[in-house]
Length: 161
Image (cartoon, rainbow, N blue to C red; front, side, top):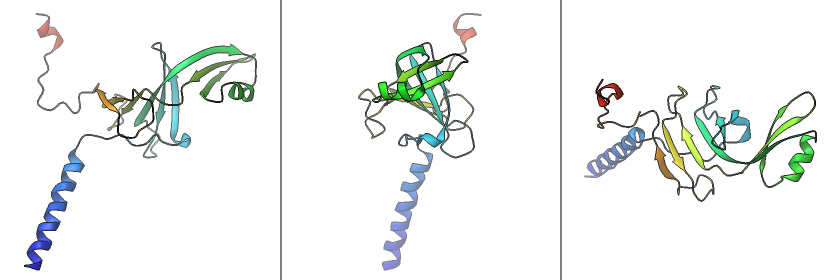
């Protein structure tokens, strides 16, 4: 009897863990600064910060921050950081001055690139901008990797070509 209960317990743990392994990707808390690989401002007013969670030097976590302001300035980085202490400061050095991007500290969007191919696999939005804590909402699946069972129609056939 004791062996049967133990076996059923192990069987239950096995099935629960198997479900977790095959589930869709989940967000992890925002990674530390050391994991940042690159950043890129976009015309939509967001600054994309790419991070590497597994240490292979390829982006697998992207945070999209709102750009509050951006400008050229001959002031030093320390002066700009002091002026905008409540925000994040990114800069590009030029020979005579710097171009600064002042961004919000909490991302508006998070994206995950599971297979690290450069196309985001899942996006979540954080309307309350309080960090990854479980209240993020699903936003999009740009790569379509998690769209099993959904039929897609080729663009040419939809247009009648």
